[in-house]
Length: 158
Image (cartoon, rainbow, N blue to C red; front, side, top):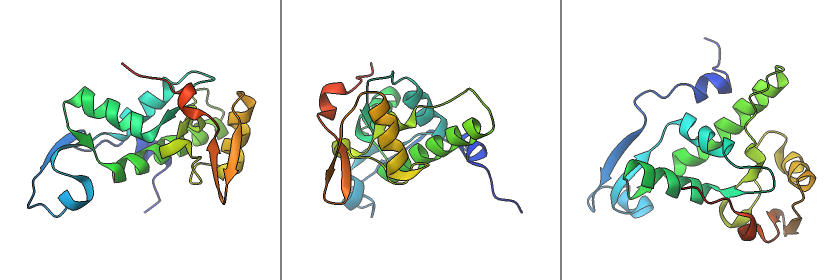
């Protein structure tokens, strides 16, 4: 059986979004905390990422907080958020490589603390180049890369 494309993964929501109750007795409570945890659909991450205008940024934490609030949950699953953000990025690159115009500006979505995402298409090098083209300054801290003063350029979603 052939592997699914990133766009097939992006558009396959299954039973998502869903909210799971995480109680103190749940083994996931130690990792995620207790409360109502949202597992959002991949397309929801893509939709939020598409809202970020040129010159602005967002982090995965802000996207997760926005989606949790939208669905009335206490928090979102960090693990699936990271996976789905990467699916959205790779699906956009697939569309672009196929001549498509429906591009998600995934490079504007940073990891916690303004860190660049090494798992994006083209790795750190491409994300750095795309961010610098939009006027952002990227700085190295050891082996990791961050957008300088990223918090001043965050796009707050309502």
